[in-house]
Amino acid sequence: MKEVAKGGEIILTRRGKEVGKLVPVQQPEDLQNRKIDWSAWALKQKTHLAKKSKIAGSALDIDREGYSW
Image 1 (spheres, one colour):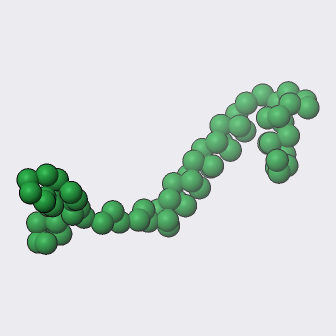
Image 2 (cartoon, helix red, strand yellow):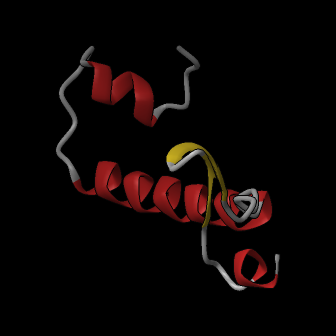
């Protein structure tokens, strides 16, 4: 068990044939960090759109004005 806790694997066998495996539990991704990453991405996109020239009636123009899709 200590080996698995350190990141290793233990293969379970029956009569010389592999029948299972003990592996470490995958930890869930930190959702708070994920939100920070998405907000940074959104800010980058907003800055990028602000630099683009406006084309009246285009999807970019509508998005720039803050409409929801």
